[in-house]
Length: 154
Image (tube, rainbow, N blue to C red; front, side, top):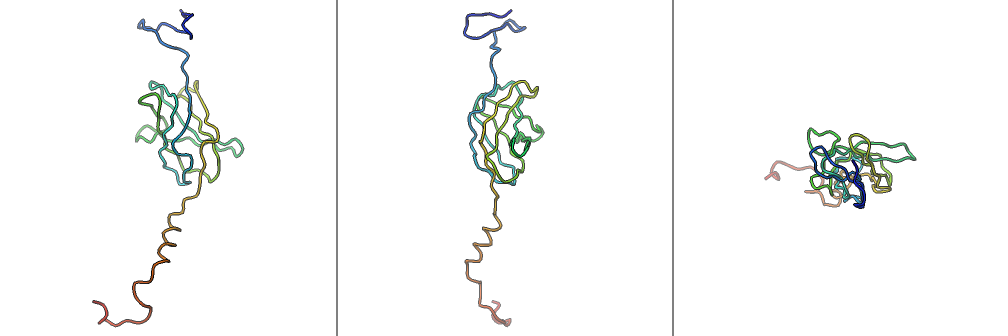
């Protein structure tokens, strides 16, 4: 039996306690706006994620048709993430195509509650090897070029 006059609809749970039935989900921000295309980055989302539900995050782009499901970042949990404090939650991004900005989409395991943080994530190319070799080329060679004899091998 719903109770009215309390500012929201309230209901009685089976154990006799009052519970708020109007809670949903909201994603307000993420801590990493730019990531590399190789994936594996653990992102922390801030918003409202009830801790008693399992959440799935996706990276979406309607223009290109991109729809990539993220991982939980916890071994054995697959794509299902759980919030410990109902305000922050973590997920790991899979390898993505360079581009963006992409939308970050979250929904519960039943597909009833969902929210989207639009234009939140940009993917760039990481070039670790290019930077490494360009740095090495700036150093002088360890010895002069030319033939050596064994006497110089101290």
